[in-house]
Length: 233
Image (cartoon, rainbow, N blue to C red; front, side, top):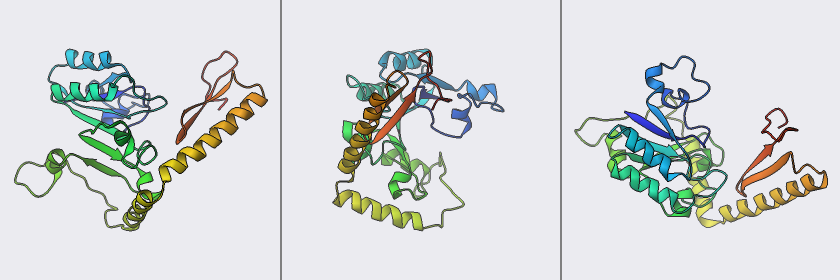
């Protein structure tokens, strides 16, 4: 009945299980908030501590496969092993990483296959489409072609809209036939180099920096005390 979330990754859902663990938790019952527990990225010990503290209670762990830095020392594989050893699902949020690092997402880049994954509008080159994908044994639990209880439901009032599906099919064709991933990396590197050059030229290294990967750059801003500053941003 519990969900483990990586606290180093800022956003997973608008549903109570996540929002209740954020600063925007107004109106979420404490009983619901208590069912979401944190772990740290690249910290296997923090993952192990969750399973030790809540034996048999954690249904799944959800995380982005990477954010601003790559996984260290087999981190993703180790978390996957801990999940499966404790009967929990291993879930990737690839809303950002999907189709940017590799045609198969960051999971393809690092060679680790989660139980479930989410992908966002990069699937359709900006069209309003998203996908929940995963191993058949888990996806079938929400399907129609069995006589067991359906443990989840995917439904939408926009289900009949098909433009986004056409966009996704064409986008995937282009991804397979052209080096979109390589082009994103090339252009991102050019952009990062240009911004870093401007930062150096204006003597702003103490206040502005560029982190992340070429296909997913993040701009950091700090105030006069060297603290992160959203106002400055």
